[in-house]
Image 1 (cartoon, helix red, strand yellow):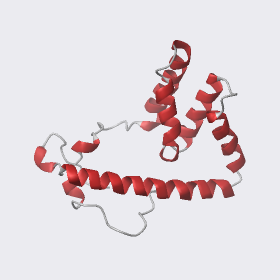
Image 2 (cartoon, rainbow, N blue to C red; image 1 turned 180 degrees about the horizontal axis):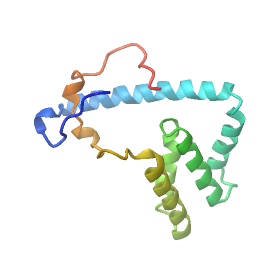
Image 3 (cartoon, helix red, strand yellow; image 1 turned 180 degrees about the vertical axis):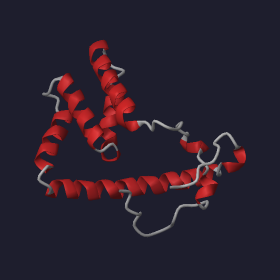
Image 4 (cartoon, one colour; image 1 turned 120 degrees about the vertical axis):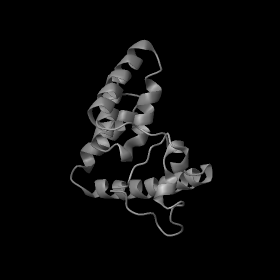
Length: 147
């Protein structure tokens, strides 16, 4: 576990360029991890069930309640690999009143139950202490395995 710094202390923050470099590195690592996850899921016995839930979460033929429930199940099962479902839930929560309310309730349960850390405050990306992590992300080669 990395040492944490006070995000309010400007001397502990990295430069905007360091934050951007780490963001690009994180995006590459996420894309790599997602492809590994998809391969592993497709080979597992749970792959068919997950594929059904994934189709339901994206299907125009499914009811909005079914799409919301399916997206919540995906995010709860693996938030890192289903960020797109989380983004769809967030976007849908601002639509009409009935659909938005159902999505907002699902999001509330997800965040309160499994996504937010119970013992510390969240730190915005640009205010993270990037200097403590060695300044710049590693260059070249495949990104490290996240999970």
